[in-house]
Length: 292
Ligand SMILES: [Zn+2]
Image (tube, rainbow, N blue to C red):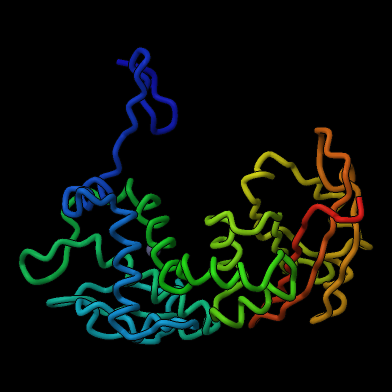
């Protein structure tokens, strides 16, 4: 009965969201907190218990008692959680940059809370296949809270001021995280009123950039970027691409930046190429221009 659209089943006027099994199981354990509230609280408590009050926060020093050890290995993913007797081993990909290993460690700690302990060896007491993404997202947020606690990040951004590459780079160094993790965090908390774009070198043709990710402040949620115009050879990201480490600033007209809508002011765009291990990353931060 009813029509299924995605995961939502419509029965008459009532929309019943299908509950995710992993999240539902954790809810039953941690109520009245929601799984999200519980996980964020755990992240903060682990930091406090480890005596870490200032960034950079080190997940390996904030392990819960359930994690018996952290091993570096050549694995295909960034990190893995391996259940063993009475706990877990976290495996980290030794080939990845330090910042990604740190994030993976925190992320895997998040997964430990989705296991049951009856019997000695941790196991998942629910069918977990369909729940992968809900759990994944919560573990991302857990890792973000451990590495970039909301309170610390908001306080720091309040002190350093507006969105720009210099401040972004300062935050990368302070928190020791990747550009991707920082942009996701800033957007999740809606802290910077900006559009942040990460471009990477195209493997197929090394002179081209391709989109890696875009994070928009909620005010710009529906602004659609004209990529063909933004990525012309004389654009801010490309100029930055050719001169690593130099911040490139320019002004771009709304109609050249966005598709549709009456967005007739100018925008500032700042770009810089950061050289991450094995890849070139260009970060662009786009904000309304003051000189409109
Ligand atoms: Zn995961």
